[in-house]
Amino acid sequence: MGGVPTPVREQQRRDSWAAVQAAALALVSERGFDAVTVEDVAVAAGVSRRTFFNHFPTKAAALFDPHPDDAEALAALLAGADTSGGVWPALREVCLALVARQEEVLAVRRRLVGDPELDAYHRTAHRHVGEAIDGWVGAQLPDDPFSARLVGETAAAVLMTAFLSWSPDDDPARFAELVGRGFDLVGTGFA
Amino acid sequence: MGGVPTPVREQQRRDSWAAVQAAALALVSERGFDAVTVEDVAVAAGVSRRTFFNHFPTKAAALFDPHPDDAEALAALLAGADTSGGVWPALREVCLALVARQEEVLAVRRRLVGDPELDAYHRTAHRHVGEAIDGWVGAQLPDDPFSARLVGETAAAVLMTAFLSWSPDDDPARFAELVGRGFDLVGTGFA
DNA sequence: CGTATTGGGTGCACTGAGTGCAACGTGAGC
DNA sequence: GCTCACGTTGCACTCAGTGCACCCAATACG
Image (tube, rainbow over all chains, first blue to last red; front, top):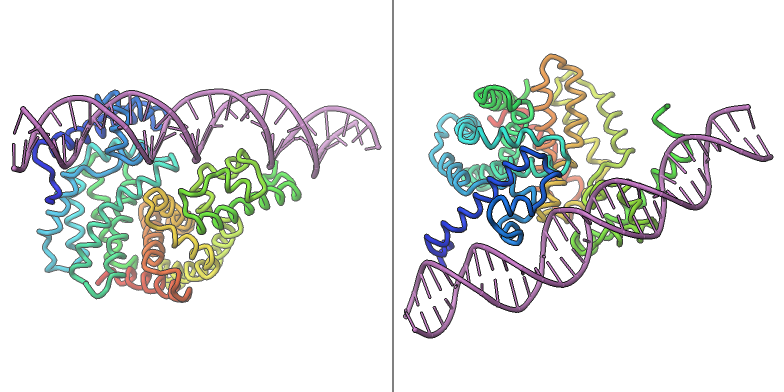
């Protein structure tokens, strides 16, 4: 019944998941996406090829699916957000706190832009954030799902823009700066 | 030399391209993405499997890559846009004119949401529009590429939100209405 | 005109992603 | 200890996508 089967099993599963994602990021950032096979990743993670696909639906997903801890962290940030100054400024702070957690992963992913297939997955990765925001905004605007979704999509667009405008060789702090600037620009309605 | 090889060849190629896309949209909207093979599409289009991949890099691309005519139409709309009232309101009108051209294709695509792989491609399809806008805004703001890209990404986010909030059974005009409303909401900075 | 060239279409063989299925083994409940 | 649940595994299979050599029709050129 409770989604969590049992602590030990759950931990095994998370470890296995994390080992596969770590191996995928390491190999792909070293050799490039096309030069790494799922078999390579599985071997490096100490897992069978079949198990890889038990965790991730596609090769690209191993690179871009959010770590459960990060998903929980985002939920916590949203739950604790201060909306007294409005929804959009509150989201600004949430996203700034979020990106600070993920510097290393973002740097690896940034080196992968250019491949069309990967770019598509890249956008869904930022969409994981957008969807969480959807739900959060939607709870505050239960009678306006369109606006809630638009806020989530727009926040994801800001993150994507900052991500693409940033270079992994730059100071990581510059990425946060770009995110803040993006939120500010949208907040003025591109006046 | 000139990119266009010669009128006849160019026309042959476009016809073949269009036949494949039409076949892909028809079959997939009828049976679903996974139940249609590239072979099926090629046969229905009267073309070899190998030719399919000469036109489209992936199966999903056959569904989502923009028709050359539409790409040219967008460029023309942007070139003729009236920016006297500001960049964002001008984009609003361009996007409204654009979606009016594509009602049928959008209705088919709308039936395909839900598949994660397809959703990823879906976003890149709206990104084709965003990229054209990037270039257009970038020409007007040559010293601020970040803002130019942000405008393009945000416009794509508005289109995507309207697309997801719309139902193919709705009046097509409602889709345009949603696009307009999305641009208005962003234009106020989510105040 | 006749000949050479170009460029799209095709067939073939090959790699690798992704899936269904039937096991196996180890933690958990009784 | 027995049984059940569940993550893992191996195997066989379909199909997406690619490299390559070849064919044919449309063009360029003499």
